[in-house]
Length: 302
Ligand SMILES: [Zn+2]
Image (cartoon, rainbow, N blue to C red; front, side, top):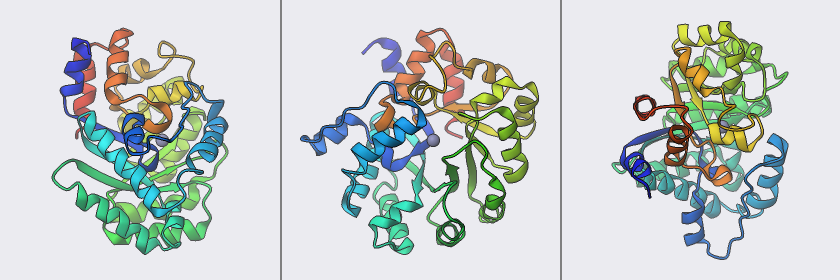
C-alpha cells in the first residue's frame, strides 16, 4: 500500500450514501461464502444492466432472512474495515418480504443489527423506498418504519426521469417532524430541472448523486443557498455510464460552486470501490488535493 492510500485508509471517514444489502465488500463476502461466484463487472450496461446483474447474481443468492441479514452485516463490517466511523445506509423496506412480509419483523431485525454494532461504529439506518413503490407501501410500511424510532433517515431512489414526486410530500414532511434526515436520489441520469423540482416538492436535507446540477448555475446556486448536502458517488456514476471517466466527472465543478459535498460508495458490492480507493484516485488524477479531500472527508462526518 502506498503512503497516500495508507494515510487515507487510516483516517476516520463517513459513508453517507450507501444501500446496506448491496454494500458488502467482495473480500469479506468471499471469506463467509468461499464457493460463491460473484463476477462483478467493471462497467454495467447502464442502470438497467445493473438491475439485471442484481436479479441474476444477488437475488438468486439472497433468498432468506438469514442471507439478507448476512449481506447487511458484511456491509457494516466492510465499512469498518475501511475505517468508516459513520455509516448512513438505507435499508429497502421491500426486504420485509424475507421477514414473513412483516414490517414489524423487518424493523426488529434492523434494530438488532444496530444493537450488535453499538459502540463500534456510528451506524445510522435509513428507510429505503423505491420511488415506484405503491402508495400503500409508501404510507403503510413507510409510516410504520418512521414511527418505530429505529431509523435515522429516509432515502428514496430508483426512477429519476418523469417521476412525479408529489406522492412523497407528506411522507417527507412527517419524517422531518420525527427528526429523520431526508434524502432523495435525483440528477444522476436526469437533468437539473428534475433536481430543482425535487427540492421544491420535498425540501430534502440531502441529495443523492445530483451530478447533473453542474449543467445549471441556477440549480447549483439553489443547492448552495438551501444548504443541501450532495452525496456523490463517482465510481458508481462511471460504472453505470452516467459519466465517461473520472476526468469527465463534474465533481470538481460542483465543489467549486460551493456545494457541500461528500464522496460515497453507493453499492460497494456492485462497484467494488471503497472510500479509500475513491479518495486516493481523485487525488492521483489531480482532481483534488489531499487538503481538499480531507475537508470533504470531514464534511462526511458531520
Ligand atoms: Zn444510491
